[in-house]
Image 1 (spheres, rainbow, N blue to C red):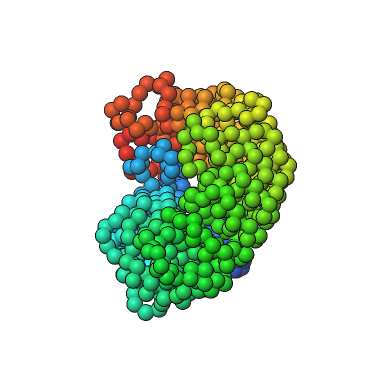
Image 2 (tube, rainbow, N blue to C red):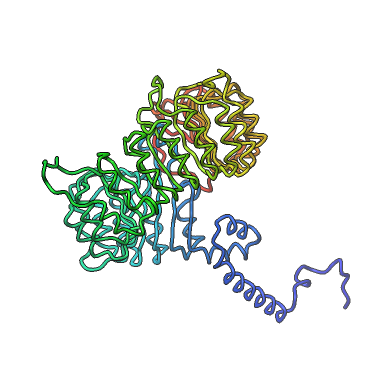
Length: 598
């Protein structure tokens, strides 16, 4: 009997069993080939794009991903992440927003590592590397890491808190293949545990040991023995309890070092007249591979000549703890012709920056930090030193510059002379400070940066800015991914320009600026593409925040005040103290009482 094609059932259109088998076999072959190709794809963005093609590509990408990066620990639940990615060997996880560094986030807000540690312990037996930033990490979490992963090799804790020396002791004792233990700008509690002594006897695999943020004494004898038996050690950054004499002893046992944090760079005791000190310069001269130097936490400048032998090879020099003057810097920097990265205090004055500009023609990154960030100070660095850098260091790609006064002309000069700038953070400390010479807003200077620096991805603004500057950001800042705004803006139009024009924006941080609900609601089209929005001490209301939550259910909208509690939520028209908004596939379950999730 013949059938009308229009009446044929869906089953009739399926291929015969033999054909289906061949199709499934072909799909499996293609998936195997794809997996073999994806092994060589390392860029996170490329992998994310691959996972969006179709279900089979998404499955193949997940099975071949060995490195997992999560930029917000609340963007996805640990269970969902470990269920999708089954063969991960390296995890990088970020927690609190950056404004937590400025005490704008209560210490008990969250970002706990515990649920992640528990989930990974059951899912990733082959885990080798963990990188955490701004996470709350306990000693128990470190114990889970140390005891759950027999091949664990690398641990980096950056700007983390909640753990102490007892947790470090467990890591040192159990992770026998440990290559990297980096503690960077983290708060480490002194549990009076001699954690350095817990490293196993015999040869180690250590390649990097960084503990310059640990604010407690170290068992130096144990450290010296550890360094002596770590033949692969390349990076060593010491805390301020290590004297220059102890540094000397460590250096002669590890001449293979490439990165060194010097500790205090001062003697532990006052050297008596006539006492013979070690030849510190000879120890530095023996470290022929040294390219990165930091530390100098309690520096006595008389010892600076000791580093002269390595200056010619240095590509990175961090003097951000060294209170030295222009002449003392000049004696060092005049020997550093290969320098690419320089961090300094503003104690070097404009004259020190002029010396840098005259010598460091290959400089790529400069950071100038303030000794005293009070607004009413005159300030030792200004547009004069800034202009010298702009004219002398034309390969500059990144700058962070704290100062008390600036001019549009100096900023424009940098935009013209340093077109490769990708990071521009100018922090004029006094609020609403105008051009030092003309008295005009700083609009044209910052406008020139976004207009002329075509590679710019990160921008932090300060000084007196009007909506005109923000219109420049929206018009020209098409590649800007991170924007930080403090004490700036005229009206809602400023933020509207940014949200409607900066199409690549991922992270937006705003504090103490006059932006309200109208500005907030203008970004509805873009918030799903952003990692987060932070607004504190602005003019957004609870009603405006609730409207965002209503229209965008895929966003988590947190509002909170340090003084609020669950019974005191405020009225709809009340201005919220802090808004933190981020995309997420799962609502957090550990929010403290003062956090209201709309």
